[in-house]
Length: 166
Image 1 (cartoon, one colour):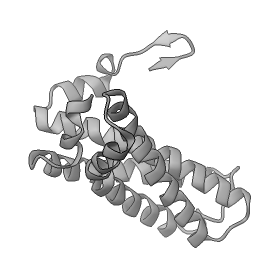
Image 2 (cartoon, helix red, strand yellow):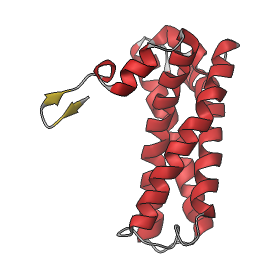
Image 3 (cartoon, rainbow, N blue to C red):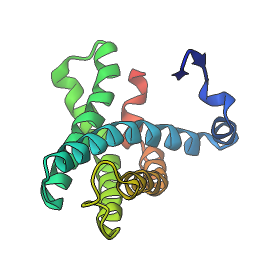
Image 4 (cartoon, helix red, strand yellow):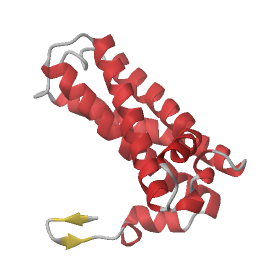
């Protein structure tokens, strides 16, 4: 990561030290979930911002956010697979196998959370309630999704199918 010209490596942060102290399966699950969270967060935030700015109601905003979360999540997985020399046609089922359950769990949890917060979806883009609820929803979704990813990776599924391409 690079913040304002300052080079920061994840392993040099408190979170990085905690992750490095975990057993390898948990470490891989956390890494896979962070990867999933990145794509989901990009899609989720973009969908929420677009839908809210256009004055849409909750259901269309959630549908757009989920669609974009899957799009960005799969895109982030396909990219390194394509760089490994796999054709686009062959990369699609790899991405689907690697991320579908993880993204689905993350999207169910984060959307259920933000919709359950009274007024969060109607608060508007300048509201701390909107942004705080969205941030909290992603954190909670991450915590719930890590064990799901550990379970799938432990069975040779989920992100385990894409690791050989990294």
